[in-house]
Image (cartoon, helix red, strand yellow):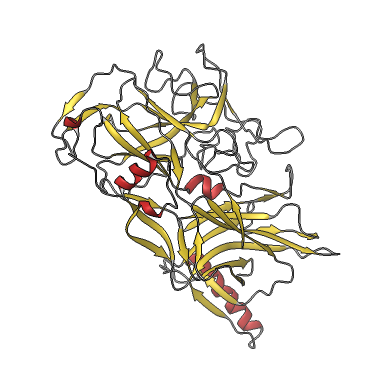
Length: 489
């Protein structure tokens, strides 16, 4: 298998700022098992990811990470389900400035004591390092802008890129006049009088807000993406087993496909960072976070040497391990995380794990192109200049029976064995398999992973069986499937 190194640093810095003074309130009895500690006002949290292409954790189409809501309304506001990015803020129980306010005496263990949710609500100006406390109000920035309806000023929504596949209306300069994707998409807003306000937003520098009025002063681990799978105890690192990948073929583009191959990674890849001492109030804190993921995917083309290859429509890309399974949830040891992050070295990542992982046999990505429930791999003469690329994040692990399974628009399957005797999926590396689909032998072996794919395969089997009784059709369930309806509609 071809292995491509991805440089994924993540969350280069962050800062916390409040609008009150630095006074601290001692709290001895509270909702967290009567923990003894100091609480401080919870201000805004600013997380900056990347900067240059060699220091990003995840990618836009050209290597730049951005904080961006998954879904917005026609005016740019968050939808009712608030599908935007969130980070978790976890107190280790230590106060490194004054140990008398620690919940833990001596060394910390594997557990954390909080899991505060911080939600992405805006961006900093390209000249800013942290939210300004000057004339600061809770929802009023001087050197940045908010998502529409989240605060003042609001970022401009509309303009270039508003309807272009992965890009939405918060991207400005996302497309240049020639139709190519700009390597440095930016946001815009009406500038203020602040010295750091240029009116241009760094979309890689996100602003986050929490509903908690106060948090503990002390040592923190910060992770992304947030999960509510725990409130205290070990941090739960969780990966989805299903991804939705949007692909748009056509123009304007700088190649055959308008897409972000790393969209699933940008939205879901797990990162963790460290703050030695969070003081709160107007004090600033910063952290560096590192990715914990490996990445597995395909580069799909269809080509012949002297004539056009056939067009092929792909519905689903699956990663499958029949006997061993693929890890998708893993608890992390807080003490190991702190030690590794303070040393700026996560190693292969597995040293952070504690307890037994949770596994599934299959991880998969469903592809769409507009209203089409598939993406078309266009035939070319000779190897294509640009492939249809789909990459999924997984945790670092060793798998002995890993396969890639492709599903076409007819629900037929193509299976590729990609494993070595023990395939090691390295942290921060991408394992990308290049596949020529021209002349591929698709089998009537229908691999189903959910209710939709089961009923779709059932329809195909029923139709094929009626038309040709000599055909052999097999439906193989790769997941446990809960049926909500009696038949297909």
